[in-house]
Image 1 (cartoon, rainbow, N blue to C red):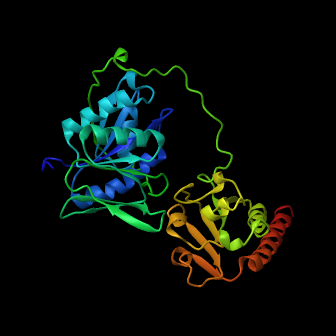
Image 2: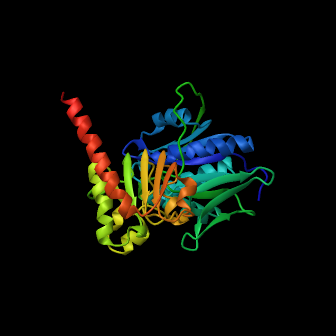
Length: 341
């Protein structure tokens, strides 16, 4: 491990000319870590015609932005992105690099880890640093989500981690922030690259957009059976919410996998999250704990979900929900009458 490694980098993923949301989220947590270590925070931009995006990274917390703007980098391919990222890492020797746990982020992170002969912690949900030892503390669920494991990379640099989208929060953009843009050349020709992009065909969008939902009603195994789970749908229909479910609910066949919230499903940050019949196991809560308001219903007063809930009701959800649905329906009808009066 070299003592010259300093600074925290965030790989800024660009899709269709736009910086990915997870990259802005990583700048938020990166800013906190960089301040603790008293080092600069940098964004890394690779692509074609992406230099103007540097300003946005600075507004969201970066002190510096490393840019390689080259036609060869127009579409993501492992070879040229590895060459560009590897070149920058060897020239400027950061001590920590963070990537979004997206398909491209996972690909480039694993390639860089192999190239630089360093470690990589995947799908993290929490990040911190040991300031005294200058160690990245990368935490993620382990053993099926039953425990949280904090993983250290003591002997090699840079320390690296991929982080799931929506588990961190971006800072508010500050247009007054100033920073430094460092531009480098790729020095790689198209004919040197073995893979060619012939055509990009976009698949159909997700049938369920939980990530963008403002209100989610999520049901767990506490709903008892498929008939009981219909109350989740009824409440969601009444208040205009999206329906989510735990892994147990999905495995029971009560709803499809694209509704699943948690470690092996979607990570969500709605304004209101109803956790109904949900115990609050860590493999579920890692996917929804950053919701603005969490309303929990569970008949077990000691259920872990109450530890993170904003409001909680102890009782049988199958008895409580019909009352809630009726109350919501009546109130909404009253508001509708008033609005048309």
